[in-house]
Length: 429
Ligand code: ATP
Ligand code: MG
Image 1 (cartoon, rainbow, N blue to C red):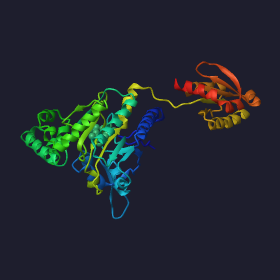
Image 2: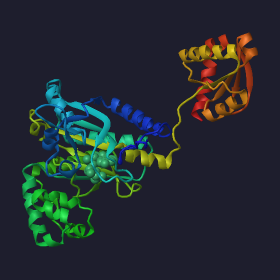
Image 3: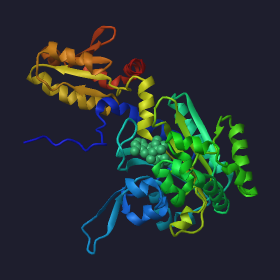
Image 4: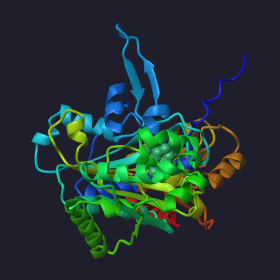
């Protein structure tokens, strides 16, 4: 029978690569924790209407990328695998009355998202995002705090050559005026626009600014700028965001063509891009969404957030870092029935006093076991043969220097301080 392959656009994240993921997660979690962001885990599927209402029906995501199906309920109901995190987090926020708890809610999430897209490097059908949502503050400092956390994470990972682009997409009063100005400007060029953009001219004209089509881009280059259509309110908010970013020493570029693919943004919109990812350049994207909670049926609550594409982040990390390997203190080798039995007991006891231990289970000769010890990445090999078993000792061999010593098993388990220091030091190298 034929073998069943994974679906196109999905990937197995294998052990050899998992170190990158764990490193990203550990760094992100510690930075989020320090800023008092709390994790939330909404379900991976929701009612389709949630995304239609939350993301906007005229967006690419809702229009052509969602994994939507009827489940087994009668009458049938439409379910969608989440294509992004914000709608689900906000639904949970409303449903669980989190707005009643205290002033500002700072939430983060991480996990798989699903979009039916054309797979390529940095673009998959199941991909992973880390995201934050700050709910309940309209202060420009909230926008800046969220951005600063994203830049902190990227910096702590040692990623360079990243650019922060920011824009203001105004509020619900400014937007219709700008939209009209844009439509007025683009209509005479309608025939020269790419077919997608022609379609958007009536449905979602702001998205045309984001077109990747060269001819369209040329036309758009001279289009009116949204920054000339901002109300005093929007303008002030945007000024403050820029000022606060500068005070934090976060450099940015103004990009009046930046509009996000999701319809819910108001005021600030931003993206962080890399020069090293080809067409899939955006690593992190987000903005403010002051009407979204209300739009989803909750109380009027301002919010700001972002989503980070972890696959893209890891592609960048792989270019600059060897795969982070798991820490391993001892590789335990044994031969002979008594020694093998003792080795199993010893491995458990060593773990209980805090060492990491890999036990060789092969039953093969010492030579083959030593080879595996060398490849294991352990800092030391512990050897238990007949003699050692009889004497309740073990032979400890530091794999880097080749130095060896015989140690009583009790010493190994009781006088651990010095050994642990040696292991820690060698594990760091
Ligand atoms: P793009 O323009 O690359 O399609 P987007 O505007 O659709 O991105 P968002 O919905 O804002 O992206 O998602 C936030 C981030 O999630 C993106 O900046 C990107 O890093 C990542 N991302 C989005 N779609 C995918 C995907 N199909 N595969 C991998 N990462 C993705
Ligand atoms: Mg997209």
